[in-house]
Amino acid sequence: MSKISKHEKPEEFTLTRRKLISRFGALGGILLTGCDTQFYKPPISRGGLIGMADTLTMASQRMLMSNQQLVQEHDVSEITENFPVWNQSDPDDEEYQRLKAGNYVDWRLPITGLVNNPISLSLEDLKHMPKRTQTTMHICEQGWSAIAQWTGAPLLSVLQAAGGIKPEAKYIMIDAYGGWYEGYDMFDVVHPQTILAYGMNGKDLPLGNGAPVRLRVERHCGYKQLKFIKSIQVVSSVEGFGRGTGGLNSDFGFHWYAGA
Ligand SMILES: Nc1nc2c(c(=O)[nH]1)N[C@H]1C(S)=C(S)[C@@H](COP(=O)(O)O)O[C@H]1N2
Ligand SMILES: [Mo]
Image 1 (cartoon, rainbow, N blue to C red):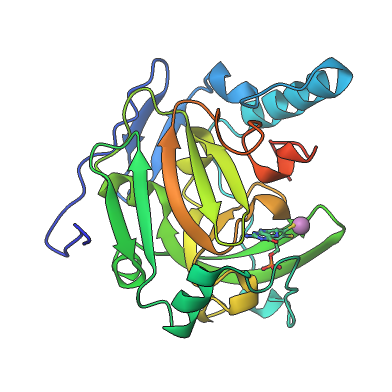
Image 2 (cartoon, rainbow, N blue to C red; image 1 turned 135 degrees about the horizontal axis):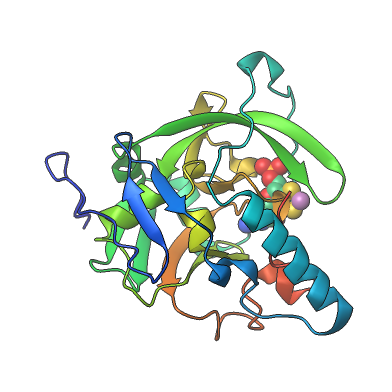
């Protein structure tokens, strides 16, 4: 059962980490003053030159983005007509197929781990939360890009609804139907354009693009834009997930930090 009701105001999100000074603006945005060096490295560093390159890229990008500026938003006239459906188009997963057949009415998103009040949200719950619509460019690492308009609930609001995170929280791990999973650090979680999207171009999110809910984490390449979301766990370490690198793609040799 969901704990969200329209009369309930989420408690202030608590990011009580040393040096990470956060506060909420009138619109519920967040300002990060300075850039904590904990955001300069992926959870697991690869060795050698490639590991050094990973850290250099991530640290320099994070420094440049330390005030959490927004990525470019496009005019709706620039929306790409046939946005591709990439890799998985319909997870071959019994539970997913059952939820799909029921038009996702029984879909629930558990938010567990290092949160103060674990919750489970229905699609309706998500749609009644604060909402953001953004028209952005998706850049796939495999050589294509396309523009679409996404509507969803800011991930920050979702974590607020779960009572905020505990001080030791560092990453969120998201599981998807069909076996994909990805991890993200709090720097990306708190960004205003990081949303759990249930709408695309003014309609429900189409099946192939990740129905019923996908992540939009706009400063990253395509493979971080996880589709077919199943559950969210807030953790202090990425240990124990897959091969332990913090995401399916990094498990297979891609950069964990996929800054575009
Ligand atoms: N669950 C899941 N998420 C996924 C993928 C996938 O195959 N399965 N592909 C990723 C890649 S590589 C890209 S480019 C985008 C593609 O999103 P689209 O199918 O909406 O174009 O989703 C990403 N998220
Ligand atoms: Mo991609």
